[in-house]
Length: 141
Picture (cartoon, rainbow, N blue to C red):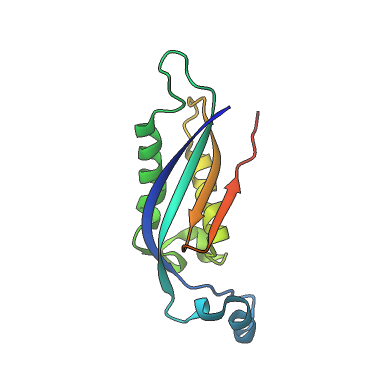
């Protein structure tokens, strides 16, 4: 198996707050990230495709195809947005970076080209220099 990882940057804001928790529980769990006005990050998103290199083209997946998919389905939704209010998937779940990775993996998996032999393998998102979250996408082979 060969993998290809592409990196993408975007800026977005969020507030870590759960309606299922009390104010004191939110403060305890999320600390300063529960600030009522939210806060922003400059995220680094990595998307990894996996599969077999095509013998004819020598490529795993056309890079332009992957870039277009990420731009059209992810970056256009997340970039310069307030995740709590602008992204429908976060109307019911807290936009922790763990959940951001899961939502992005779901979006990419749902929109992955059916005729693409390579598959989505991993989504990694770096929130800060100290926090990164990685989701390995189960193989359906």
